[in-house]
Image 1 (cartoon, rainbow, N blue to C red):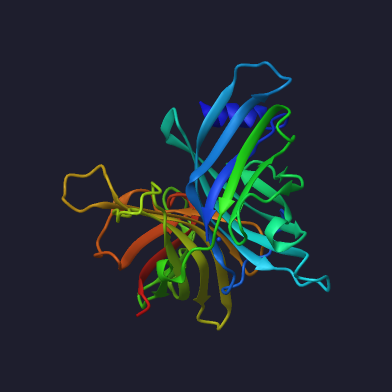
Image 2: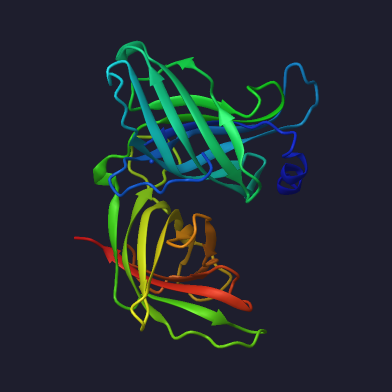
Amino acid sequence: MLRSFFRAGIACATMSFVIAVSVAIAAPSPATRSAPVYRLSPAAAYTQGCFPPALCPVMFQGTVRGTMALTPIYSPRSASTMFDYRVDDVNWLVRLKNDATNELRVTGSGVLHGIGPFASRAQRLELDLTIEGQPVQHFDSGWVQSTVNFPQIDLTVSIHMMVGFDMVFRVAAAPVPATEISEYHVDDGSTHQVGCWSPCECPVQSPQPMTGKFALVPIRTSSATEPEEVNEYAVVNVRWNVLTPTGDQTSYQGFGFYRRNVPGPWANPLPGQRMFLDLRTSNSAALVSFDSGVVPTPAAFPNIDIAMSIHGLACFDTLIHLEASPIQ
């Protein structure tokens, strides 16, 4: 229901996201491997509906989780009074409170501005976001006084400054500790394959070897300090290379999510898993979505063995079979 409502109203809608984050403008610039990863905290939130002076009763609220990356932008200005950070690889999911099964995928990029003395500096966050594959929309917090000490972030961005019908994100953030980022190596056996599957008829390329790295960041469901089992991870810093017999190379960069212990529609005792990624190739800046769906888990975690495609292996498609293990 929300997806159809969202698509129908997006032209006039304003969005404001309230997001709490712990360390991750359209035409994105892929984050470098060294860019600090920020993670949204359980305080992150989303609101869509009417704000004064509008009186319509429509209002959707939900939580937001995921990651993004911040990279300093060099400036000759004094770092003690002014700073800018490029925001890349926005990798978020919105879950509505009244519909836990209906999630909105959010990707994008932007810029974080800051000015003033460190202890009392003003900040402005501008983001160009794509929601559920819809056209890019510009979100802006305006200049506001910082309520947390940088590198934490706590800002609210919207399309229309929360006037009339709008969409809103609250972004509150801090870097992910390095001890919580698990680096992975793409193992032998990982392949990339392009071609036709049923019902189409065209040649299927032989599986090509794939190499590279990525990382997993745990997504926690509460702010409690006690240990909790983590079944969802943000996939960040995807850097994969596909090697062809002719020596050509295709590179993938991107981000997404990996879930484990997902209930599956099968009778065997294997737990389910799902990985869905938004990837861009070295030949295009556009993101392409790959999804495994919920499938059995053949490898014991933390090892990963999963296949994902763009169209669910229907007609012309691209299939990625990923075998990966943590870098020791």
